[in-house]
Length: 138
Image (cartoon, rainbow, N blue to C red; front, side, top):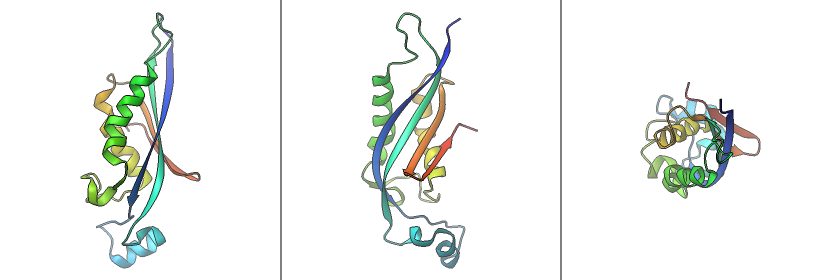
């Protein structure tokens, strides 16, 4: 039996956003999101960590070549979100608040079909050194 291992690759992208929900009034948005509800938006240097759960190939000693993981993240997430305003320049946050939580789910959905079925274990989005969210497809 080949051991099941977890491998993680990090990537970074920069994006602007505004925390705002169409389900709340302007007053409620200001109360809930505070300065992050600024109509002009603000930006982050995001870090994304993608973890795969896969059997290790005994011939190579790898679960998957990390260069392939890197290239997939770059093509499916970074190329789509880097240097974009999440609400204005992408279709994903037109009606969805661009919280780290929602961003982790969006990134999961962008990546899922590009890895072997069932291998995507976790997508973590680090918004600041103090704030992160992760999604495991649940």
